[in-house]
Length: 394
Ligand SMILES: Cc1ncc(COP(=O)(O)O)c(C=O)c1O
Image (tube, rainbow, N blue to C red; front, top):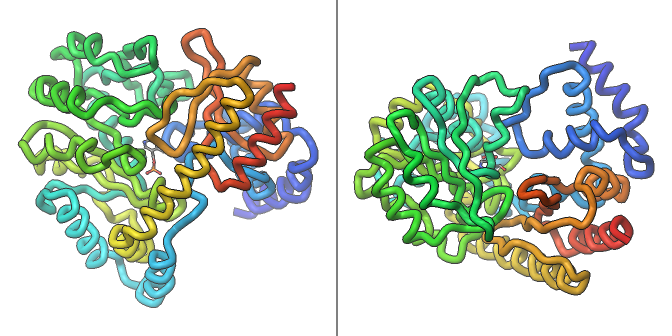
C-alpha cells in the first residue's frame, strides 16, 4: 500500500506534473490510450507497462481533450446524479434489492423476463465471462478488426483461439465469409454492432438472418455497446432474436450514452439457460454498487437526458465531419460516438504528437493503412482536436 502510494506521489510530482507541456515517452502514450479503453484487454506483462499504465492515468486530467475512450462528456444525467447522492445514505447495505429492481426495469424495457438478464459492473465483466465460457470449448469467430480482435497477442493469458475474418473492402462485416466458418469447432461468434473501431453498422435485417441461421450451430454474441447511437436503436437491436428463442447473447453497456463509464453498469440479455451458464464466470450483478444501481434506474427512465446527449453528440460529430472534409480527409460513416479516419502519416507518431498538444486519440493499423479513432466530445474538445490536428499534420 505505502509502496503504491509513494509511486503515485512520485508520478504526480515528477514527470507527469508537467504532462501538459512536455512530451511523454512513447510507451506512456501507448499505454495511456490502451488504459483508457477500459479494463478489458488491459493486461500488463511487465512492471514497466504497469507503471506506464498508472502514469498514463495520472496524466489524464491534464489533457485539453480526452478523445480516446468513447466516453460521454455531457453526463451522467442530473437525475442520475441526484439518485447517486441520495443512495449514499443506504450504501451501507448490500445492493441486493436495488440491483433486483434494476434487473426488472431492464427486462421490461427489453421485453423479456428477468431470467433473461444478467447484470455486470460494465459489459466488460460479461464479455470476459462469455470468453471464459467459450474459450475452453473451441474457437471464437469474429471480424478483424473488432473490439476484441487483438486479444490473442502475447499479453493475453486466457488461451483463447480467435478465428478472424477480414472486413469487406468498404469496412463492413463480411457475413458471407463468416457463415461458412461457423463449425463444430466454433464455441462463440462475436459480432460488435456497430463495430469498434470502425463505427460502421450492419443493416439490421442482414444481421438478423445471420443470427437466425448461425445460432443453432454456436451462440452468437452481439455486442451492442454503441446501439444507442444507431439510427433506430429499438429495431437495429438483435434483442428480438432472443424473444424468438434463439441462442443469441446481446451485451449492452451504460458507459456510452448514459455516461456511466466510471459508474460501471452493463448487462447481458440471453436465454435463461445461457444466463445461468454465464453466471458461473462472473459476479451475477453483485459487483454493482448501490449508488451505481440507483443511478442506473434514474438514467434509464430519463429519456430527456438521452435525447439531449444524442443531440449534442450529433452536433459535435457534424463539426468533426465538416472539419475533416475541409481538411480533405475522408472518414468511415459512424453510427457511434467515435469516428475512424485514415491518416497520411504513421499512427504512432501522430498519436504521440497529438498527446503533446493535450489531445488523446486512439490509433489503429489495418488494411495497409494507419488510422485515427477520435471520440466525439464537446464542441470545445472537438475544436481542440481540430487545432491540434492542423498543427500535427502540417
Ligand atoms: C464494443 C465495446 N464493448 C464493450 C465495451 C466495454 O464497456 P464497459 O465495460 O464500460 O461496459 C466497450 C468499451 O469501450 C466497447 O467499445
